[in-house]
Image (cartoon, rainbow, N blue to C red; front, side):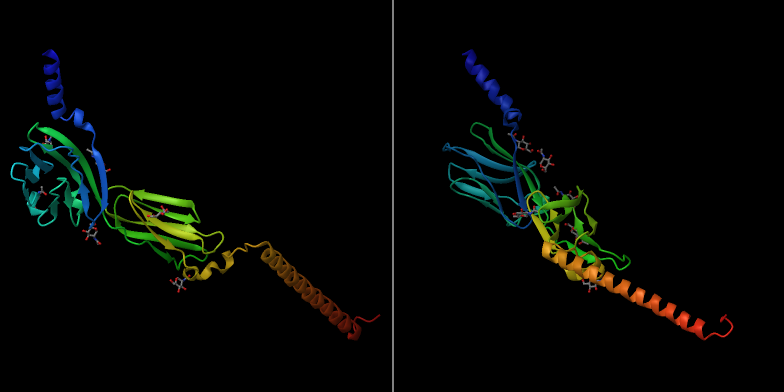
Length: 264
Ligand SMILES: *[C@@H]1O[C@H](CO)[C@@H](O)[C@H](O)[C@H]1NC(C)=O
Ligand SMILES: *[C@@H]1O[C@H](CO)[C@@H](O)[C@H](O)[C@H]1NC(C)=O
Ligand SMILES: *[C@@H]1O[C@H](CO)[C@@H](O)[C@H](O)[C@H]1NC(C)=O
Ligand SMILES: *[C@@H]1O[C@H](CO)[C@@H](O)[C@H](O)[C@H]1NC(C)=O
Ligand SMILES: *[C@@H]1O[C@H](CO)[C@@H](O)[C@H](O)[C@H]1NC(C)=O
Ligand SMILES: *[C@@H]1O[C@H](CO)[C@@H](O)[C@H](O)[C@H]1NC(C)=O
């Protein structure tokens, strides 16, 4: 007898949300459909199953007559967007909106048991980042920007390594992240990311007119050729200088020779 009482009190304790404290996190991108699983294993013939969003009743199924009903939710925001599976009692939210984010739960009336609690997060679509140059800067510098975002990070990558990164939490703001390029090649990209998706933009070499000076040679052979070219140019410059100096000297000598005042 006492064990039954303990069991009952344990159950009502769980109704207070202590036992059902496990909240399942569900994430989706705005516009996509999302299904919250009922986790119903067996259904009693007289069960009344209810889905709630916060304190708002969204849907109910009466197992007695299998009658299903969905409601429009707060301010009618769920109108025509809810689907209740007749077999599983799972709730599908179509064309999800950011304002759908929050806590959902499903209960059954027979035992007044909380079956499941969900924390739904609907993320905004990520805009593609834009890479642009800054005309005021005379060297290899570009900037990546993204407008009107929240809960994202913006990063520069070279290949798979992160070069720099900034992030924003809740506010909807614009972000920009500059990059000074050491060695221009096509391995740079800018990535905007939230916890469930990302958008990537590769650096187009055309965007950097002044970047000729920062094109690094990557292959060994190319390096040797460049070095050799530089040496040839260097030697040619010295040769011109030497020629110039010699010819000036001989000019002076000629002048000296022809100058009458200087003769001894
Ligand atoms: C379900 O959620 C609503 C709103 O948060 C809450 O009032 C209700 O107590 C919850 N039900 C259970 C059984 O925890
Ligand atoms: C319903 O709309 C009103 C006015 O637009 C707003 O103040 C209120 O917060 C909304 N309620 C919910 C639950 O979204
Ligand atoms: C729900 O998820 C959001 C985003 O991950 C989080 O910030 C929030 O604290 C969660 N809420 C609860 C009650 O778990
Ligand atoms: C910024 O984003 C919000 C929601 O994501 C949207 O309602 C608003 O129109 C956007 N503003 C601009 C200027 O794009
Ligand atoms: C972007 O997302 C794709 C798949 O969604 C993933 O393969 C890739 O690693 C992600 N990129 C970054 C930089 O997180
Ligand atoms: C800036 O980028 C554009 C292409 O997006 C290019 O036509 C222009 O020459 C670049 N300007 C500089 C200063 O690099």
